[in-house]
Length: 237
Ligand SMILES: Nc1ncnc2c1ncn2[C@@H]1O[C@H](COP(=O)(O)OP(=O)(O)OP(=O)(O)O)[C@@H](O)[C@H]1O
Ligand SMILES: [Mg+2]
Image 1 (cartoon, rainbow, N blue to C red):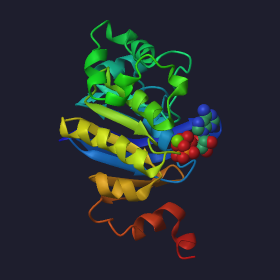
Image 2 (cartoon, protein in one colour):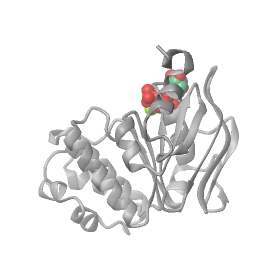
Image 3 (tube, protein in one colour):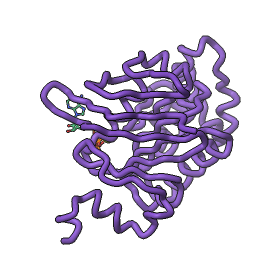
């Protein structure tokens, strides 16, 4: 059953059209990935789902409810967490304080200690300023912060950007562990090889529209993805 459905989404910023007629779905328990070059509309799509940006047209349905244009806090409370691009942490606050900031909207229900149990490295460093963590640790911290809301669906924007391969593996270990515990994931990526290994289904976006969608199994050799990603003409070059 579809947990999330996005239908015919259009997003514009002033005169700039970022998304034109995009549709996608995430089923319960699935890991779905959005791939695509810079400016394809990947982050804009996640922003609309999470309530950070109002779409010009289209519909977002989550667990049977129309959440299009809903407020970010309400959408978060209904079970969708966004891990935004860029690993924004409060550099001068400690790891634990960063998590505490993430709990303000859960009215004290958030379980910081419980979340830290899943992240031994963060637990060890709970009193460190977040600005002194490595890139990988900061990525773990923003994922941990998103988990405080106990989401059913996590939207993760480019978790591997700028990280070393070994660290990317650690980040994916965490994401796959969440999946094993029943979470559904929509992951924006630029690294095709990781996602081919870990996603159930893949959408390739370019120019704000879906160019290709299929199961990861069908796309395994990466050729169709490359063509969709770069456009058919350039793909032949
Ligand atoms: N706040 C904004 N104001 C104006 N234009 C924007 C804004 N955010 C995004 N855009 C434009 O919308 C288009 C899609 O941007 P978006 O960030 O969704 O792409 P993306 O696929 O996430 O790219 P990247 O891989 O670089 O993160 C781009 O042309 C971008 O310049
Ligand atoms: Mg982006």
